[in-house]
Image (cartoon, rainbow, N blue to C red; front, side):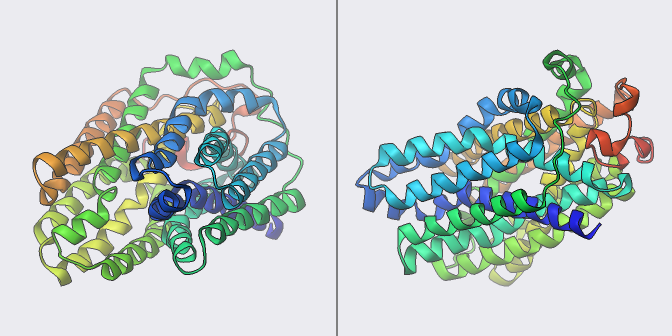
Length: 410
């Protein structure tokens, strides 16, 4: 059991390294633009192309990798991320850096999908949701510490040092996987057709719509976090940095809290989440111009924000129990689509209505998510047929409470 816990933590470390690689460039784009001699708008494509590749290739790459042993998939993905960071540190050509943003992005959803499923399979059924939540903690810790530390290293040491940090984290996770991860076979050798068959389910697409809407609600405002605090709350750069750090730290606690709530009442938790976000944005809008109330608002915002990851993954997983890794890849892809839509909507609100009205966009997406969740609940709680050997939570990799508590929240 102790070794299993170390394996789950190793997967969380891998997630931390991947998130640091994906999002760490956000804070160092000006340095990249300066040192590689490209326009800021061109450097911005290093962020956009990553999300675009994840959104468009995720399900297909996960499907192709479904026949490969899980340890091989995880180790290869981490090796690619470590190598890509090393290339960032060594190259002085933007074209090379751009190419090595595309390559790891292809492996990003594969690693996440396999890590989430493997974590749930490695523990007893009643602890499956907690294991998935621990893996997701790597995301929140990445936002809380990985991204700010990358910026700090680039600012106080060098751009290369920031990238070597990312390479080191991914290499450490790779060594952990090689040393600790069991020789787990691929997910029951499911045929491609049996995995694709889940796409025929209307309830699955309502769950997907909820995922897209929740992530759009989250990132339509979070994507302009610094802009909001500078323009509305009138904080300076160092104060915004401190707020970002506090936001990320609270995210870690919020992630664990929502994991516990999902174990006890999954349906109620999923249904309540969009409502909580509407309340959060109402608070942020109301207290935005005042420093001290907004500081408290940031803490509340961070605690709720973190729940979007584990809540939406759990919700979609209920309708992909017989193809969990493919279902997780859909989650990764469509959550990135939600980030793209939310960022675009937030940009439109900022330019046309003003920064202070930014929470309106998030609240609108949250209400759309609530509608999708309620419609999905109206379709009932039927569980897709499974083969006998795939019927247990540990085998499917789904959250332990996904079916046993399906009716608990009604």
